[in-house]
Length: 239
Image (tube, rainbow, N blue to C red; front, side):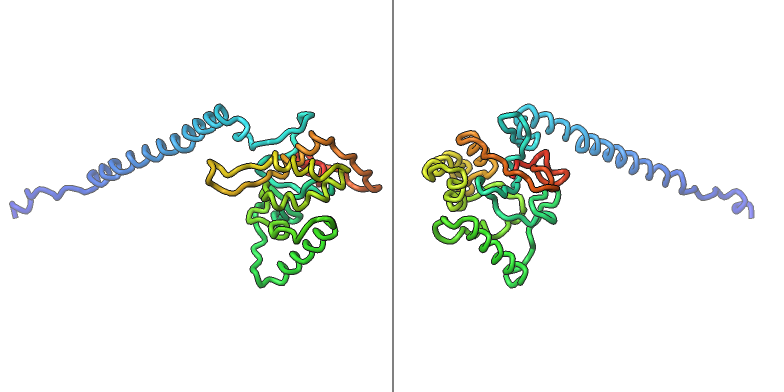
């Protein structure tokens, strides 16, 4: 009985548990905060600062301005040119009306899709109607949309296929337009990457600089002003 009365009580585990939690949580929370500051604040600021210092145009979206200093688009984004006096880019399935930079995508239609076949047939008919003097069938890239819907480039073959239409609409010799297309061809990156290509926006701007901008046809009564739909007019080159 005396031994039981003087027995030492068993130690409680709670202090040890609290110490273990503190040893784990404090370093974990500290590492999390440090990672957030480094990757969420310091790193973006450093990269953004270097980009603006080394590549100011690229970091701002590769915006393109005309001779008046007005932004007319970006080197990286395709936009439509409906008038026959301009080269036209690839078709676009980005957004409801195409060429929507906020909805970059392809059509996601398979080769057995009836909708894809009907769309390609309609484009072929429109190309034949707009380019009666073109030689041979149109390159496939003028019939099918790109994967992004915003590809700003054409192959030299696709640009030259439209040459007769553009020259006729502007009333100039096709050889002069051909020379301009060749001047604006971009070679393979580093000589081996990609394929030769032509940026459609830059080519159309070069057309206006070399031969003058064609007169804008009068808009029908009640039609929207040239420059595209609301929200697009500031960046779209007049179609």
